[in-house]
Every structure is written in structure tokens, then in C-alpha cells.
Length: 71
Image 1 (cartoon, one colour):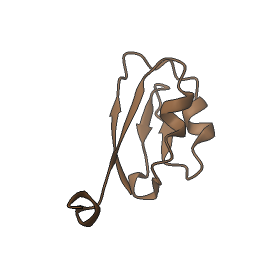
Image 2 (image 1 turned 30 degrees about the horizontal axis):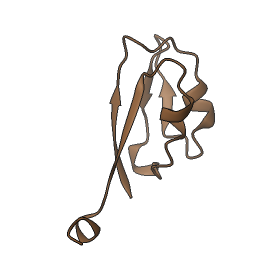
Image 3 (image 1 turned 45 degrees about the vertical axis):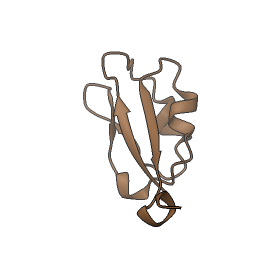
Image 4 (image 1 turned 180 degrees about the vertical axis):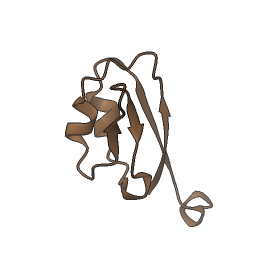
């Protein structure tokens, strides 16, 4: 399953919780301490980043592959 991220950077305080809990190291913090998607191809759509973010700065939408979406 693939995913699409919406990042609300104005809400991100750079705590790094999302980065820590991501099992595939998809997320990282930039030089300003804001979250960004570093390795989207590694995402397994587990939702840990969205679930753990204390500031509601990350929203993840799971995208079903075309074969599954048609059924």
C-alpha cells in the first residue's frame, strides 16, 4: 500500500517523535528542525507518524493500488 503525506509545517515544532517512531526511516528533520519526507519509497503506510505527532502536523492518506481500488 502506498501513502501520500500532508505536512503542516507551521504546526511542526521539530520534536522528532515522528522520525523516531517511523520503522522505515521515511521521515527526517531539516536544518531548521522541521519534518520532511526523506525516503517516501520506504513508506509502508503504518501511520505511526500521524498517530504519534503531538501537534497534528502530519496527515497520511493510504492509497490503494489500482487493482485493489477497482474491486
